[in-house]
Length: 227
Image 1 (cartoon, rainbow, N blue to C red):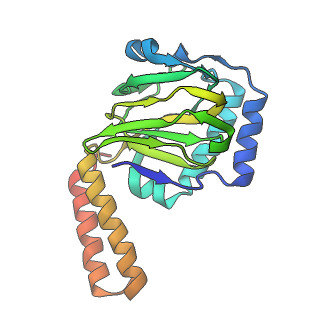
Image 2 (cartoon, rainbow, N blue to C red; image 1 turned 180 degrees about the horizontal axis):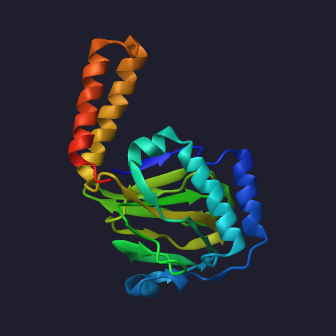
């Protein structure tokens, strides 16, 4: 399942994060690359553990905790501390797949990467090119969202970032370990949850159908969840 989550960062939070990035020191983006990615990536990145990255990351994690759509879609159990990259003119990231396990060097924090997330920090009119393109069974999907919006997609997907031809694209990227490892199961639960919310809006939370469907949701989650 691939889903856009609008407004993860509101105006104030976005301005705060962008201000931190404006005053930060950037390094070569391959400092966190695996072998395959190092051959494909050309961009800059904030160093893991830098003051700017940690402060901006805390703001993003707090925002994710307030996002019902993110919680419903990801069913998160662990989130890798957000990282930050910048693509200037000529920068790109060729087709690759994310590592199955992500490890933070500083403290050996690790997760299974079930989902990948890109939170856009630059508006589309600030740069040309730079589309995140994700491949699935139905083809390739180019994504270029407004600043503060986020795309969530299976970490097993092939994806790339097209070359920048004007301006600069900044984003935060990170991975999520879900309570439900299987993407098809997560999709089923998300669709069911969305339908329950719609029925509850139409009929009220006390409606018998809402109660029964909610029971089905939790029984499926109980069957599939790893906590």
